Each structure stands twice: as C-alpha cells, then as structure tokens.
Image 1 (cartoon, helix red, strand yellow):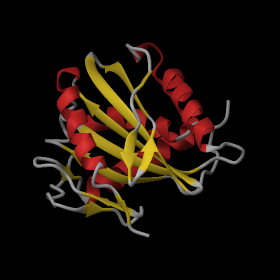
Image 2 (tube, one colour; image 1 turned 180 degrees about the vertical axis):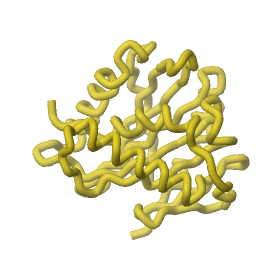
Image 3 (tube, one colour; image 1 turned 45 degrees about the vertical axis):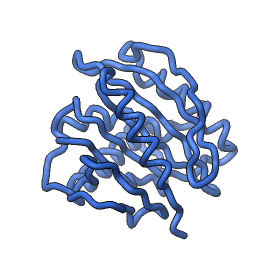
Image 4 (cartoon, helix red, strand yellow; image 1 turned 90 degrees about the vertical axis):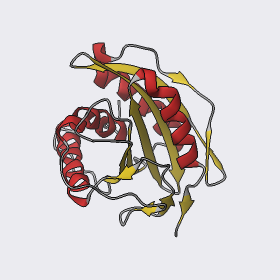
Length: 202
C-alpha cells in the first residue's frame, strides 16, 4: 500500500480535539486560510480555531505523518482549516478539519480517494464501528466532491464522521466532519451550508 495519506492525519485529529485549548478564534462571516486558496462562510455558532490551536494541530499532524510514514519527508501537508460549533476541548463538539496535501506520485484523484478510505479502515481497526458508506457527492465551487460516512469509537465516545475529498490541480483537500451520532444530521446540514459557500481565491 502506498504511503499513508491525509486521512491518517484527520483520523488522529479526532483524538486531538480533547487536548486542543487556547484563545477563541473569533467568528466571522467569511474565513479563509493563509495556507490554502479558499474562503467559506461559517453558519451561526461556528468559529475558526485560533492561530495557536491551528499551530498545535499542524504540529500534531506533522508528528502523525512522520510516525505513519516511518520518517518519510512529505512536503506540502498542511492543516488549512479547523472549525468548531462549540468548545474544541469537548469531544462532543461538532468540528471540521481540512488538510491539504499534494497527490502522491502515480496516484490519480480517484485512486487517492480509494486509498484514503482503505487507510481509514487500517488506522481505526476495531475502533471503526460501521462500514464506510459512500454518500451523495457534495458540490464544491461547482464541482462534485465524493463524500463518505462512517462511525468510530474513541475511549468509549462514539463519533459520526463525514469525509469529503476535494480535487484541486495536483493537490487534494481532505475535509473531515466529526460529531456525536445524535448530532450528525444537524452537523451535516451545517457542512452543506459551509460547502455551498466555498470559493477558490487564486
């Protein structure tokens, strides 16, 4: 199997949410990222993480990638967004992380998606408590983006997850929504609202 992809980081980030603390990022009708070329509007109640929280997430992500690849140096992997509808210290808070990475050599986007889903199964192992089910594509800036749903349990806490894969030239963006299963429908509705506003800025 090819190297572990961005989903490895997104999966590990689910475990980081309880450890993330820091100053409020502040709510804004439009948020973007210096490390990515897009902007979105966040629904009421959603906030972008503070710079400190995103830096912590990026450092954690880098450590996970390094560990998962046996120290292989992978250029261009970045945590571009971290949004939450509540306190990031609480695992029950619906949250979204977006990770950008270059498509690995020899993989097209469809193969990237397939390999990423296999990595979810491999990384979660017994923590994965449902099959990975393909949902309806989500339109992102006028293009369909494949989406998948599954559930997993961490330290006795069940989480529903929706993963959206976005193609952009020779890069891929992996967006992971995490929420308690009972909040999954509302969180997915919020995600649809966010994705409907996604605009590329370059």
